[in-house]
Image (cartoon, rainbow, N blue to C red; front, side, top):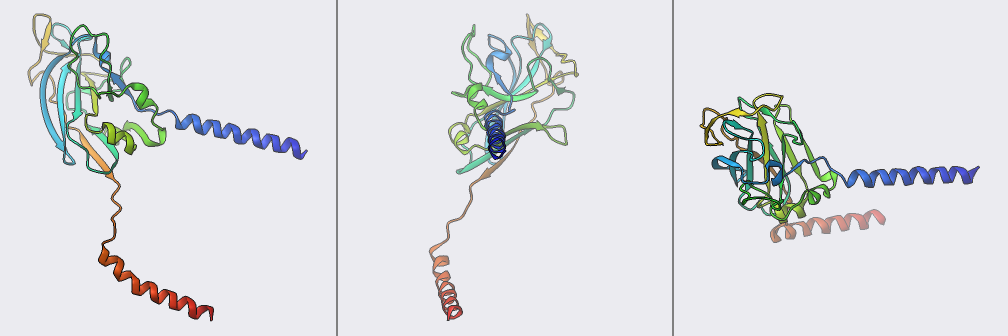
Length: 248
């Protein structure tokens, strides 16, 4: 009886361990390769930059090469961190608000927001959408689920969190991400002007690029000053005297 009970317990523990390993090796952070927007250069409509938490972020709005034609613009906003994160950065949350006049596009393969990965093969021209150099979708998928998260907050803004100090140290400066939007929940494109078969959008025809907000956590455990350490010595001496008296 004890033997069968022990075997059952071991089986249960083994299954729990496998489940824990499985859940730790997968995460829900969405990724978007360059090729998701077509095999050629997309149609850049505007470029700008902003700053959040002291970090510079380059921005561009574009109509995707694959889904835009004539006056139809399948609109996305691409972003790339263009300066180093603070020293000792251990966590990064990127939050982007959906601009007025647009809705988050979750049609097809898009989650609406994602990390732009390095996928430069198979293009008929030079890709011009930001991407995270040297980082593939597989690299991001390998991050433990305990260190990543993705979702929509109470204000309806999309966010991605990465709490992996090693990844941030290697790729924080240059990390690229994207927000896909549409005119409605069916994923319909925006209507713009055109130059030949290329959409050309004015500021009144597409919403301006929303500026992302960064939330950065750092390992800020202070090192005691020498004077602070010296001031502790008398207290430690009194503690030792008290312990000796207590024993006697």
